[in-house]
Amino acid sequence: MLNKHSMGRLSLHLILLGLVAAIPAFAGSAVVGSVAGSMNATVGGQTLLPNTTLFSGDSLRVNDGVAVVALGSTSRMVFGRDTVASFNRDSNEITVLLGQGNVSVFHDADGMPVRMKIGDVSVVPVSGFKTLGEVAMLNGAVVVTAKDGALRVDDGNGQVVNVAKGKTITVTPRAKAPQGGGAGRCCSGGGSIVEWVALGVGGLDAILAGLAVSRAGNANTNATAASSAAASAASAAAAAASNAAAADSDAIAAGEAVGCALNTLANDEGYPSPYTPPAGYVCPVPSS
Image (cartoon, rainbow, N blue to C red; front, top):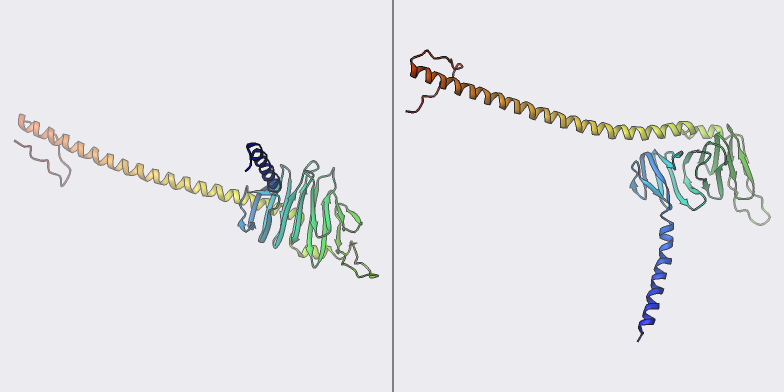
């Protein structure tokens, strides 16, 4: 049998094993950002709601809609329709793994570093600049556009290209070539802008559209609250009117009772009746 000392050591080992096993779970719970607005989007199969916190490991799907994610207080990412993406965060940067679709990013110069990965291709805003850019998957290629600032594109095979403001490039991921075979092309500047426009999501337009969705959601919430307040006010007004009507009725009844009492007193003293009841009302005969 184990003595008390052995039991204590065994308990300590079990506690340490539990803590080690829990480390991945805690690591996976790192906060990536929060939802500024969304429409027809889900995370982990659940409807995405404004102010939802996103964690490392979460998977986002946008159907026929849009999702706006705030990274810190200044940077934003807008995921367009038919987009699938997941998030990873470590101590150095936030990584967005784009499975399909498109994403627009507004990255502040001092914001948390952000990396967008599509297979072996990675795209990062060039540090030190405010960057507005777009990354999209189209017919097996990756289309990268810099609207402001600059984006650095790494094709995963040692070729790195900086995309300057106003420029668009198309990156074709290199296929696994057989021995002695050639590799696919990396980057080109032609033929991609028309394809990009066909996506229907421009960078600045996407940011503004996403923010409009966010504001529309807030406006809808405010409108619902206002409607509820108006309904409460209407109910209170109806109750007040009912109370006023009841008060009027009570006042009339009280007046009639007083008037009839005055008539009774006047008749007893031989004076003319000072009160004329309303039509159809007959003063009650006082009990003897």
